[in-house]
Amino acid sequence: MTMRFFDLIRMSSSNLWRRKLRTFLTVLGVVIGTASIIVMVSIGIGQNRSLMAMIEESGSLTSVEVYNSGGGMVYYSDGSMSSSDENLMLNDSMIETFLQIPHVTSVSRQLRYAVIMRQGPYINEYVSLYGVDRDILEKIPLGEGRLPDKDADSLEFVVGNNVITEFTNEKTQQSYWQTGEIPDVDFLGQPVFTIFDRNAYYQFQSGEGQAPKKYLLQASGLVEGGVNDWNNYSYYMYCDVDALINTLKKTFRNKVIPGQPAQKNGKPYADICYDRVSVNVDKMDNVEAVLKEIQEIGFQAYSDAEYMESMQKQSQTTQLVLGGIGAVSLFVAAIGIANTMMMSIYERTKEIGILKVLGCAMGNIRTLFLMEAAFIGFFGGMLGIGISYGISAVINKVAGNMYGDAYMYGSNAQSSISYIPPWLALAALGFAVLIGIISGFLPALRAMKLSPLAAIRNE
Image (cartoon, rainbow, N blue to C red; front, side, top):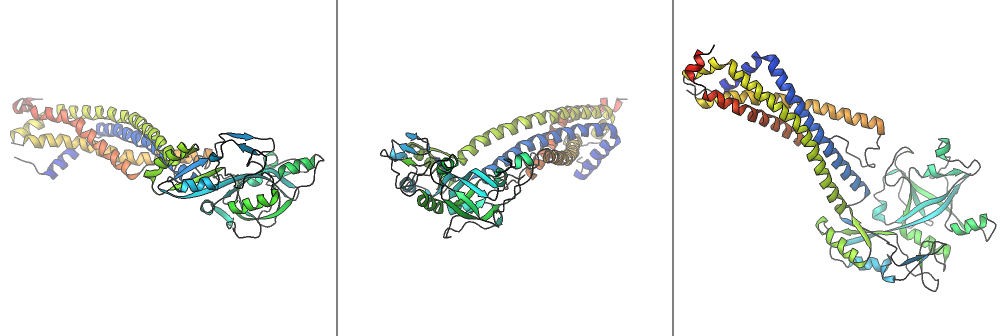
């Protein structure tokens, strides 16, 4: 005789319901185990998402960052430098060389220069002004204003949201970090006096030389966020690189620009030497080959793709370790399921004997007990999923209260400490059911092997 599937479901569920306390305690073990696995793995996934958000914020996975390594460079006290190897200068000629490398689509330049800025009584004697290409400018998250106009009559710049905290009141010699008050500097409303020749400024301050030339420059935009927010653009100013080069050449004319290489005779080179360039590659699969070719030329270079690969391996290891810790709880729950099912067999020996005498198929008896074990795993898994979402929310809430947005990365931060994707919840549920079935397998086999007559005579 073969029992209908729905009859098996009804009998297995009613048997569990008859022993409410025992069933509840067994299910509770599965709940704890399932929640442990999900929360532990979600922390590893959250770390991986944070890593990805950080990389996306800082750059592209299809670019190679090349730095002016300083190899063969001799630096002078005025900030200039000479090069014994002109072939390793990161200038326009080298950019043309990079463009000839297979799979390279474009090269973005970056030139950093320190200037002095003043507005009213407030002054900042070391403002990091970055001249960059348009594709980099367009990545800057603007809160107010617009991007610099390359064809403007004078150099324009975007101000980082934390730059204002570095301005000092000349009268009190205090900044935001001493007073807690934001300096009264209006970048968008008023122009800023800017000095590019810092050496001449300090000489004039000590009573030597002539006053340096001052430029009256206007900010075109502000990076989004306040002084308590942070992103990769917060503490710097950004302008068009060609506009910066033209201003520097106009300021120093035939003299060596501070921070730039000089020839052996002390004269400047015709080409500007950039601090860094981003070599953009057509596909991520070709990044490694381009990276190696640039390194063979002699430059320091790295790619976010290379960094991401190594960090993802560490993240996967972390997830495995955390998942293993959580799995221990579920395996302990499996022992509880096996114990519950074995006790159920001892208590229902006569019932099993009657089913056999009535001609019930052995497979049905096995399925009956496996279903009971699967139900324990299923209900425990469902409750564990719900609890794990609650725990995850609490973890993220506590972290947010403790660190604000510091545990996120930049304005593009879309991840948190604990993140539970749908696949993780479904996988945990399936694992809980599987553990239940495995735990009930041996008790089910024992039920099948019971002698019908011995079972009926059992008291």
